[in-house]
Picture (cartoon, rainbow, N blue to C red):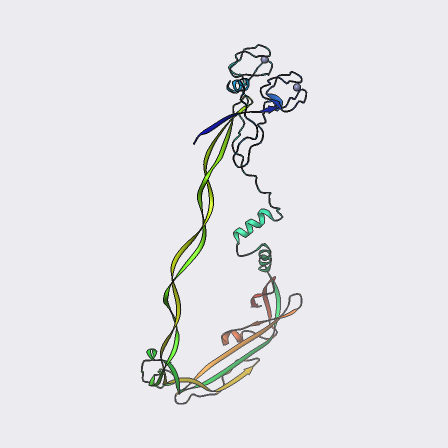
Length: 379
Ligand SMILES: [Zn+2]
Ligand SMILES: [Zn+2]
């Protein structure tokens, strides 16, 4: 691909008289005749704008002998005595005739490479980094609930008093009785029942499997042919060429521009098609049958309740093919003041634990700021 080169002439502003946009070929100001110097940004040249897409300079290139000769003379040097800018190929200062020293300085070269795309305007930040960090650490928890969570988990201690104790004990009498049930044939294994001895060792049994009928047990997914499925996608394809240009500062008020043609890529949409298996749900049938078995059924309940003293069991004896199941339930009510009178219920699981609580006894409660009682200890 052919390269195209151009020389772009920069321009400078005179700090002595204020003249602006002086072409680089003038090393002295055309208005006041002061020499261009390193200081005061006089040697920072403006090379004009470039086209955003191609990077091509919007200025015309120069083609006259004089300008091309200056552009090709190398970087300018600044006289150590008078400060004037001189051609790179000159050995003496054109202003004061001083010799060019080995330490004569040159201007730093400007970076004329492609400009990075403009940065998006910064987001307004009220919580800014703090919010981001908090969200990062506790992603499941937003700033607000975190603060409430931390405050809510803080605890304080309160004094309370036992105002009531309650116990309930019940005996549930159950009998092992025959029952007809239904089940899937392949899950039923004929088993002889066995009656309990002193309420244990029983076997429910499966006998007399009968009256089997076909019933739907569920569904299964089965392949049902294929179907063609297409999705629209995009891909990059070559679509001709486009011009791309770069510029290089020559250090003497001129810049060299190099342009060449590169392949251009465009988005193209296309259909991406696949053959996929189609599925449908098919009912699954199985044999459902009736059978005989035994189950425990409650036949009687005796209950005793009280507020104080040792809890007692009611009177109930198990007969043949029977058992007695025990239920016990204990409750201690503690009253305390947490910005208003409140009650907390302690639920002891065993009798020894329950009888240790006495009405009128002092209690220390540990309560969170959200009002949850975490602990209640007798004093
Ligand atoms: Zn001037
Ligand atoms: Zn000089």
